[in-house]
Image (cartoon, rainbow, N blue to C red; front, top):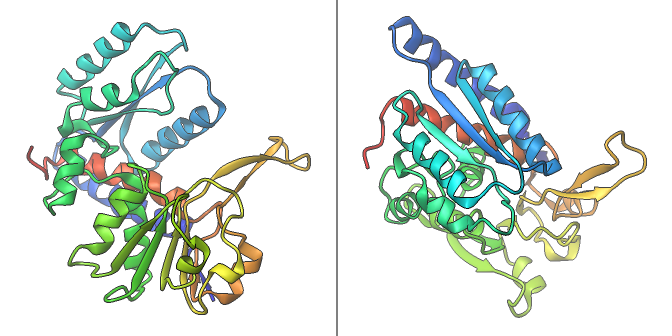
Length: 291
């Protein structure tokens, strides 16, 4: 069994990005510039955005944080998004989700200029991904695929079962895993799938992305399978300073001995999601993708 170290892999990719940024600056080009829009004071969102700002510093990006309170009027938020769309000194930006109930998240996603949508959520970027055109890919799926490639995990002809059908992870990952560069045979499963546990046990590559801590247990995993755990649920923990710890969708201690490769939580997929955002921002700065 080999643990897939997303933290170490992300660190390597950051070093590669930093080298490219240094070369751009040496050539008198502008540093890549990423902005994050944060609405309210959700603890998880605050943490994620702080990580993203720190990541920018590590690779030499310029970063900007735009803050609004929970009760920000929709027209004010959309006005700021339009302003960011028009800012020629800004390469890409994200609006951190989730948003307050009075803000339509899908409308927010669609209001972002696809050429600055470094989260890869806009329908234009999703569509380009589906048909195999260069795009700003959804960060978590691209991070997973990058891990698989860098660990040289065999995918051709393998049965990949993805448990979870969200537009952010499950659906785009199913497209990437079935493309010619990967060549897996993909099944997308969900809470209404019949005989879900038996289906999981047929997977050569099992991706758990349903947000249910400890859902995947040993009897659901085939001997020698590759297991990718996307789950990051905060659960109460009295023995930690924060009062919580992150739990994955996979019961790691029970499942790991059966696996050929497995990602831990934390330190697996999470760091790769963040570094994929940096990769997309670098693409945007270099104008590698034309919309």
